[in-house]
Image 1 (cartoon, helix red, strand yellow):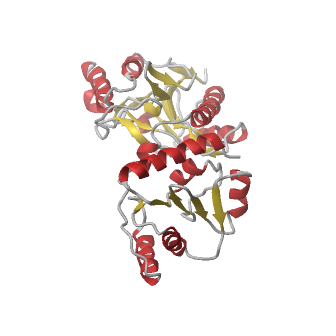
Image 2: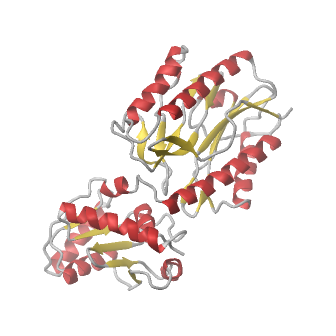
Image 3: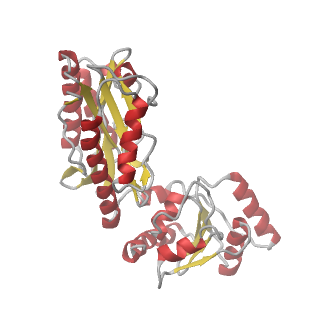
Length: 374
């Protein structure tokens, strides 16, 4: 059941924004933002099948018969949300809400698809309703940056499952199995030990495949001495873990250890630097400096980290696309890597919360290079 106090706080944030911007109402269609606003866990899938209409004193949610009972159950008795499953187009519902509320400035998401926008305009015209439809310009995603205690608890639980899966897979891997076999075992373990979803398609990249940051697992057979990059995470009540660990099948070479130590140093330097108010891009630059000073600068070409929550990639981030202070309470990954084409790759990733006193990783999995299959 939804945490009513947490959801009241989220709605209050939305209404404060509406008052500051002069919005009479907001139409929300994005599933991640709807999950955040309503607190209805595990009620959403990949379909854009729901529409919320929020005013200063009302909350309406339109869905269809496939989801209605789930929302009623998840929202619980006494919810402020008025949920309906009237057999009408979502655009017609939104236009009718505008008509009945007499809203004159109704903000819409930047991500709203053009087909819905066109239908909304048509329905408003048919009902002889006129209003302004300004864009939110990412306001909702920015509101979602700072996690409340309920969100942090769900993220920590997702990470616990992810850490347990790392312990398990380290005892499972041995030379002779394929990347796909390792992925199947890892994902099966998470789903049978508390996860209700996967954060994303797990990356299992061995040997030279590890030099491709987002390599997809395949039929490659893991051999003695291979490094394996494992980037994966458990999903729990719509929130996500994201962790990368690189392990070695058998004993690592001197070169592999040397590169691993550089990646670890970059990870730990960035985590020591990160705290509320620090510029996101500056944290990324720290990783570039550590890796560049070690002579591997050309082999680290992706952003250091991204926000995590209901979506696996959210704001804020540690990278060139977030040249702004990181707010307290945001959850961000730290994932430096070095990728040597044709040889191997190494990435070390944690997810943690940024607070006034620093960066606090959720996980307990070691930063040491783990040798498996011995």
